[in-house]
Each structure stands twice: as C-alpha cells, then as structure tokens.
Image (cartoon, rainbow, N blue to C red; front, side, top):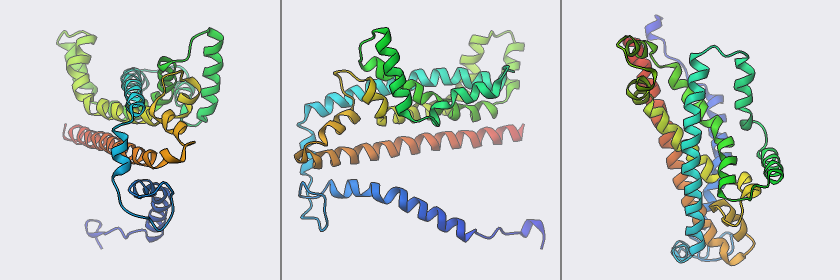
Length: 274
C-alpha cells in the first residue's frame, strides 16, 4: 500500500477515554440549567414542573446587576492590562535572547500551577502591610496575576508563526519601531489579541478566590452568588444566574479559541506559501 493511500485507523480506546472524560466533566454541570427551570426551590428528581419564574426574578434584583457591572469592570480592565503585558512578554520571549529564559518563563507561568488560595493569602498580607484598602482595584490586581499567563500562552504561538521579514522590510523602508508595531505587527497579531482578550475576560469574570480575599464592600458576581447560597429561597435564582454565566462563558471561550486557531492556521499557510 502506498503512502498516499494509507488511512489512519481510529484509536478506539482513546476515543472511549475522551468520551468518558467529557461525560464526567460536563454532565454534572448540565444539571445547573436543567434545575433552573424546575418549579421548586428543592433540587431533586422528579422535577415538580417547568417554569421561567427564576429567570424573571433576576430582573428585579438590583444587587445582581450591581455585582454584574463590578465583574464587567474588573474583567474588561484585567483583559486589557493582561493582554497588553502579554504582548510585550510574548514578543520578548520569542524575539530576543533573554538570560535565564527558561526560569523567567516558568516564573511568569507560575500562577497556572500554584493554587489560587496561596496567591490570595499572599496578596492580602502584602496589601494589608501596605495599608491599601480592599476594593475593586485590589481585585483587579489579583486577577491580572491570574490572567497574565493565559494571555502569554495565547499570544506566544502567534509570535512564533509571525514572519519577521515583514517587520525587517518595514525597518528597511525607514519606519521606526513604534509605527512598525502599529502598522505591521498589530494588524497581523489582531486575531491572537482578540482571543487573549476574550479568554482573560472570561477567566477574570469567573474568578472567585482572588475576589474572596481582595474584595471590599463592592462584590463581584461570583462573590454575590457565594453569599446567596446561604438562603434556600434564593437558590433557584442562583441556578438561573449560573446557567446564564455558563452559557456566556462557553461562548466567549469557544469564540476566543476559534479565532486563535483559525488565525494560527492562516499564518502557517501564508508562511508555507512564501
């Protein structure tokens, strides 16, 4: 059989493992939207009925909208700052020879493997020693630490697939480094930047541990949800709210990964053509 007619056989055990992994991971989460339509405050089978009551009640809760706006403010600020720092870090990692590059990159990526509670307690102690009052600003600072590795991990593949000769041609034509970045690098990197913005916003929006240690009187949405779990009457509305957050988070993460994947494949095709 020739190499051109070779057909790779599917790996059945691997497919079974992947299906089992997805079932164990996502089936418990799917119970959230299911019980958000239950006509009862108790989570149990069989369901007593079908209703949209809990979604309608969310419209009358001003605390929900206040905490939602707080989360949006923190998420947008975190996404912009972490993506901006991620661009600089990813470019430095991929373009320049940095002494001790491995340990430096490992140190930057440390929040991905260190438990968030460690960073939360450490930042709380540091902020308390500095006399800085807890607020949305301290929550944003904590979220930037958490989201920066995600931004760098998203942007590094874009810089690695970037054709450096385009920037060199711009420099040869007399353009300075600043305008080369804005007119050449930034438009080509835009899909990766958008993917980083969507991903870091989603991570910040759903982040709870940093908000738990660093928030003041202005609660973010995860903090509001955690506080309402003590009241059984509010639990169905919390399920409805969690279902909406789950749907929006899935859309944002899927969109960000789709943009980054398509952009990366396009850059590989263009570099192959050249």
